[in-house]
Amino acid sequence: MLNCIIIDDEELARALLKSYVDKLNFLTCKGEFENPLEALSLLKNENIDVIFLDIQMPQLRGTDFAKLVPAQTRIIFTTAYSEYALDGFELNAVDYLLKPITFERFLTAVNKVNSTVEVSQNTSQTITIKSGYDLHKVKFEDIQYIKSDSEYVTFYTENGKIMAYQSLKSLEESLPPSQFMRVHRSYIINKAKVTGLKGRDLVIAATKIPVSDSYYEHVKETLFK
Image (cartoon, rainbow, N blue to C red; front, side, top):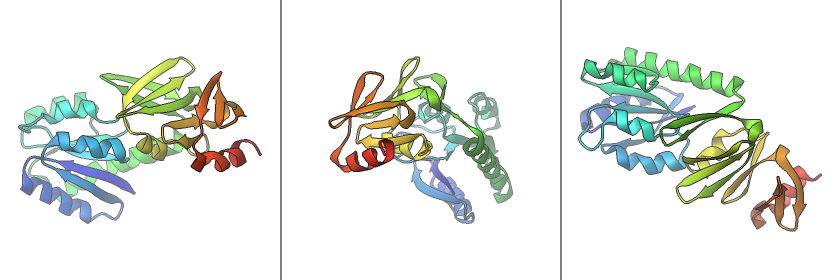
């Protein structure tokens, strides 16, 4: 199942795309937005696989908004202006749909997303972290723990820290549970990096990670059998 959102300042365009989404049993629309900035909160708290994103909007151009979304979120640009196609593909968009959009063309674009997500889930041992305008490809095994601070998260790795605009909840849903676990409302840890438990704190690379009461028994049973 793929989660998507639709961002377009034209109501009719949003309605058309939503009707196409509703025809597919593997695609779920989590929201429709006229103003792209209103979608940022949802992107921070939900795991969104694909955004249908209009390019020419009065509040913020889609090509500029695309730089703000999590790196793992696929983008399909939609526009009535063919001259924007190059901008879209330079931002590594999965596809570019020229209005008026037919269902057949829509389905082709969605199937591209579906195939890339399946490949990523089956073969990837890395995560791509978007920090500002930079992209960092980090191996799961190099992540020690992740700490949430307001609207941002910080990845603590073998090679230093990386800050990203993302919620801990969406990360928890995207990271493999065989390697990572939530231990606190502000922390996700790499199970393999834990070297001890002191009181209510896990020890990772000489750093103490607090464990919430609600997670404590599960942490002990999982990591210290």
